[in-house]
Amino acid sequence: MPIYFYTKNDPYYEFSNFSPYGIEMEGKWWPTVEHYFYACKFLDANYREKIRMAPMPEEAVLKKFLTREKQARILIDTGDEKIIGNSLFNYFRDSGRDGPGLKV
Image: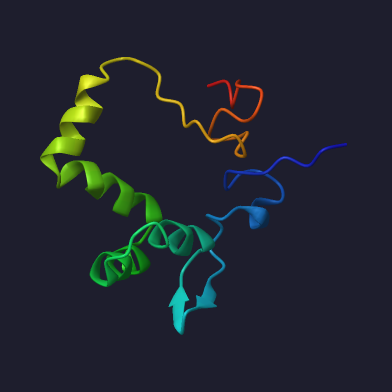
């Protein structure tokens, strides 16, 4: 039987990158694995530090759209269209290899 996890209310939430169990990487303490995961997407050390210090890593991603006019316009221009990540390897957040992703 498969074990599903993602939100705080799910059994096995501890498996989630968002669970509040920090890690030490690159000589620094990261509040969650997700903080480190997002920070690794950027080269700018100051921006990586802002992500590391954010109460939740999602806040850094939101700021990407709130503080940059071009990215904000792209997001606004999507209107009511469904936005789907196109990773072949992430079946939960993105489309996965067979294309469906999570039906929400």
